[in-house]
Length: 301
Image (cartoon, rainbow, N blue to C red; front, side, top):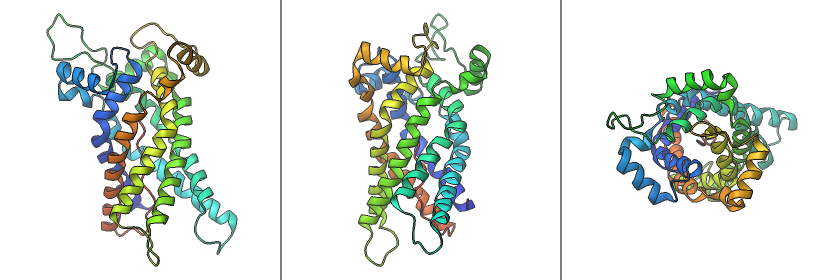
């Protein structure tokens, strides 16, 4: 992987995390806690009880691990494209849409190994509605911060507790990344003028935003199941015996439509986040004189 891709992807991913984190917190709370009935109600309650800080709980860990996840995604994506291109033989032209799709699929699955521990810590901290600054007689948060949360999960649930929800995370990110990369490539190709190698800035932003929305449309059901499994037993009695029991129990009690409960928030967050990510990535790549314009990684939290 080119160093320019790594630097650009890491910085662009960090910008995407900051831009989209407040909406991500609202999304996770709606998915996992029945006290929140909708977007505005959750946002108002969070702000009134916890202030602006409540929307950014657990953000430090995704920011510190963005370089690791970016390197896995970029490295896997690039290597897969190269291997598939070599398998077709020299002189076969640019990568096909199928190769882009398959490379994105593998890249999304590969990042699960490094993303899962940080993701469960993020979700646990986001779901803490208690405030540290409240009166002494009020209930205090279970976790004091990312490191304390990480160590507490290992202590209470074992090392494999960090990988609770890893299966739906993999089933979310694999198809979502594949669809995301493919959508980006198709839209960029449609918006590129003849004789040009890439579309203009507006085309790049549009392709990134739509790619993010399409990716989240595919990934929302598994994102919902992932969050439920990650929070199961953390605040109350354990409800789900496993992945399939979680799906059947949620569908039986709440209906199948609940799996798309956070779809609107995901799309609302995906468009501006991926516009920021793509623009930041392209600007830095141009500054570092990189010769590649592969799409940057999409953040799924």
